[in-house]
Amino acid sequence: MNLLIKGARVVDFSQDFVGDVYIEDGIIVEIGKNLNKSCEVVNGKGRVLMPSFIDTHSHFREPGYTYKEDILSGCRAAVRGGYTGVNLMANTNPVCSTMETVDYVINKGKTIGLVDIHQCASITYDFNGKDINHIDNLSSKVKIISEDGKDVMNVKVMMDAMIKAKKKDITVMCHCEDHDLSNVDMRLAENMMTWRNITLAEYTGCKVHMAHVSTKESIDYCIEAKKKGHKVTLEVTPHHIALTKDENDYRVNPPIRMEEDRQYLIKAIKEGYVDAIGTDHAPHTKEDKEKGAPGLSGIETSFSICYTELVKKGHISLNKLSEIMSKNTAEIVGFNKGQINIGFDGDLVLVDLNKEYVIDSNKFHSKGKNTPFDNKRVYGQVTTTIKGGKVVFQEEGDSDDNR
Ligand code: DOR
Ligand code: ZN
Image (cartoon, rainbow, N blue to C red; front, side):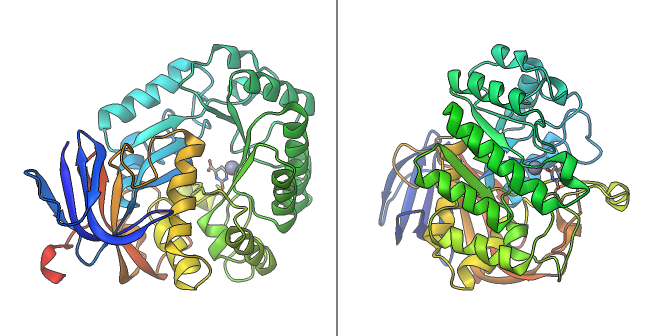
């Protein structure tokens, strides 16, 4: 697809200028000023053009839990949130432990064509905590394995999985939680396993990605490992950046923490230790939430929450936000996206930074309306999402006339 976006403020991790971007056959081929092409043109005036967002952590629930979300509704939610690439977790039914299930998800995503999908395989077969032989049968399509939703409790099993993963150049994505401690102290449960998983990563030399790091102590363990040069990346979620337990103890795992932790996450982002924003988009039905299911539907609110809490409040620049929502996340998941440079996929978003709006879960494209952010006033609305030079989402009522 060919597309010319004209007159936008172009922002990625390293640039900020007013100009035009031309996408040919789905790839960015020209960046400049006053470009003229005989193709569809999108007016970028009054908007910021950024690389689309890439999510290191999403649950689209298919196969098995399609009453909560399916690949189509997940993809529609993603593009509404400005995302064109996602890393999906393996806690489906059946669990993604075979190439058959992984391929099912990837192929369905391709047919839909809105979002590129990386599907994680599980670390242990069927999340049984013991068997890891299936890792041998994973094709090179699987770049990340994860037990997200739980952790691998047996330390030897986790160590052997990391050894296997390292040999295949696979990243182990860690949901750090000691289940023996979950009912005792959720903070200790995260801290202990963050330390354990990092120690194992250092020992085995395996690449690890730490999911939804939420405590001060866990951040410190990750920073220490990074300083020693170990292959550790880490993500934080928009909800752990925006909420505190005292104000809104929304049920999610890991739990919403204290103000001190929230401040520490922001400090770590500012100092460059946080690689990624991962939404942990976890859609549930109203009934499941009432029964205590942890998680929130977060992919449609992620940019606005992060922009409002981090950029608007002066903690980081828009370049930095682009780095942790697009450039780094694309690198972690393995997509040729996340930068506005020649040769990268033409996956871009237009955002209206001045637009203040109220989050309304009734408008979500996700089946999951579970959010702690209903009625929250935020800035920064995604107005257009482009994938490979094709407009895949357009905010209703956003026309050229008002610019
Ligand atoms: O809150 C959560 N929900 N945390 C997880 O780790 C899993 C997720 C889910 O799948 O619902
Ligand atoms: Zn998790």
